[in-house]
Length: 217
Picture 1: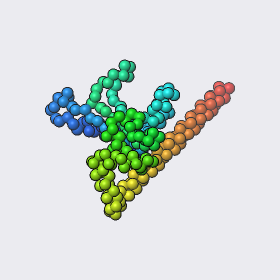
Picture 2 (picture 1 turned 45 degrees about the vertical axis):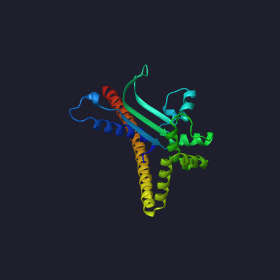
Picture 3 (picture 1 turned 180 degrees about the horizontal axis):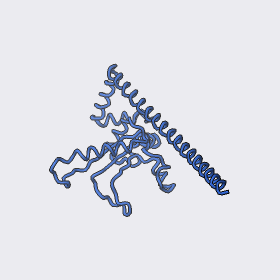
Picture 4 (picture 1 turned 90 degrees about the vertical axis):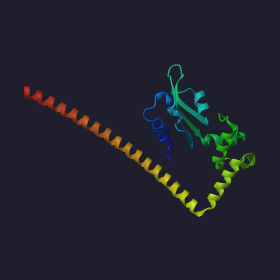
């Protein structure tokens, strides 16, 4: 329900809350288990322009499906601790890769069961529906899940609840966009006011200097 622009901050906040709740009072810090956050994103969580990299790296990152972020040493890139793992799954990149290759074993999605479930999640964007049909034939658990979702989709009250949820997401994102636009305009107005005040102060200083010179004469 969060826009891609604030998804990273939301993920880190959720990770921090979960990490802080894991350790019981009086327990040693070494007993703290790692906390892993997995986010299914409807697109990239940041634009290529925000990443400082070569054109070759940028091209490779554009279609990256699975991105893993950890706490690392900035010089030798060794992992400082495994306490944090942030996994971002770009569902649009996955669906695009499946449509281009005709296979679910694409890109950096190496775990075949994960690819199968991800195919079900993104099935509306996958052109070749036989891929979904084959997966349902091969995996009973997935077939049951798809069948259950289909039955729920036929239920009027479930559909209404789902639509309400979509409306909530829409208005939330709309309000966030309006808030960002209001903030941007406020910053522009504040900067303009500061510039105007600076000009007025400069004029006042010039007038004061002129009066001082006239007074001396």
